[in-house]
Amino acid sequence: MHEHRKGGATPDDPARAGAKQPGRFDPSRADRLDDTSRFEYLPPERVLALLDPAPSALMVDFGAGTGTYAIWLARARPDLAVIALDEQPEMLDRLRAKPETQSLANLRPIFPAEIPGFRGRADRVLALNVLHELGDEALSEVRALLAPHGFALFVDWNAEVDRPHGPPREHVYSPREAAKRLAGFGFEVEMLEGFPYHYVLRARRANSS
Ligand SMILES: C[S@@+](CC[C@H](N)C(=O)[O-])C[C@H]1O[C@@H](n2cnc3c(N)ncnc32)[C@H](O)[C@@H]1O
Image 1 (cartoon, helix red, strand yellow):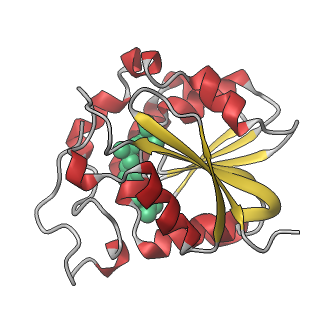
Image 2 (cartoon, helix red, strand yellow; image 1 turned 180 degrees about the vertical axis):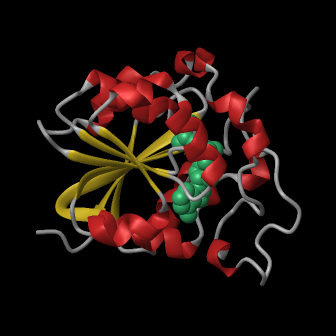
């Protein structure tokens, strides 16, 4: 599902330091993200149930890509404010161009420059298929976005299972490796039941009261 730009996590790209995958997601592969056959092994209903947001919650989809899940969530729960965050203009352009996006008043695409306005406010952060791409700085931002009682749900490709889809094993984490990385960033982590190809980690700020 992924291909990588040349260069990857080089000194020219310090923002990606710490990411397991060496390169950014290649926007020319974006069609794959719009392929809803993914819902068979990663059902959005189940993702929503795991997120379990309270009425009117603020949810940030961190690394929303083309918005396949952000749009589904915003449609399923019109009471939520869904922030679709991505660093790549090509991805947010695709998201904005979708007719569904125009009709969803509760879906807002943003770039990372707008993160400061949401720090400490997110009841939920969804990080779907993205932990292996997140550099250390971005991971700190996930934590900083969370409201004191909020949590982040990390759902990502499992390095320990044989998969017909997704990035190569060496570019993704085992559930334990992922949990260890998150713990190192001040998260209290619970491992939840995963999907056929994905692990699921629920992570709260370690010092939440
Ligand atoms: C593999 S795609 C997954 C997209 C979406 N979550 C899905 O499953 O359909 C990962 C996305 O995360 C974005 N991304 C990676 N690192 C990011 C960062 N630090 N800040 C914002 N977006 C990021 C990439 O641009 C890409 O669009």
